[in-house]
Length: 222
Ligand code: 5GP
Image (cartoon, rainbow, N blue to C red):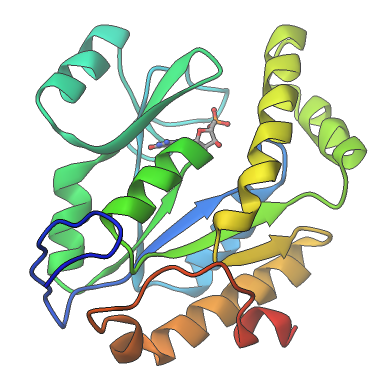
């Protein structure tokens, strides 16, 4: 079996779980949506990333992230412990390989909440992954949200706003795009995507399925 995108041979486990990749620019409000989504869907596992960013007030090691030093992060890269990693606004972020692969192998669905560079790597490695991009209603609203949460200094806000503009241009490579106009609205759309993809599990897991850039029936029905 050959993957169209990587050309690598990959054995498939028909009962493996599905991999969901969610990206949303900083300040888009995906945290609130995902919290509610996980509350409503106990069978999908959140992949806790590792990062060199300092914890924000209220963030807990092993819950929000595994907070590690630059040195330890670089060791993880050298030891091939990460499925993907990227530098974002001066910090490293990465997905733990062992955890995700074992969960998928056991049949669990796994959700990665990662930025665009990492998402592109995952799309190459897992052509069957389901990708969702959250967009803000507009950039002014996003800047207001970013400032309103008071977790970043001005320099970091400026860096993040610059990245947001670059990320928005990449939204077209995702299978689904959901505008976060209102939390409940966006949550319902995410739920529709999840339910739709679960229903089409066997079809999507066929050898040739790829992540095509298209708005699916599930998202557009909203
Ligand atoms: P924040 O500092 O706001 O928590 O996250 C900054 C960005 O890093 C967000 O876009 C978030 O989705 C992304 N991110 C979080 N974990 C990972 C990861 O494991 N890999 C990659 N590539 N990006 C991540």
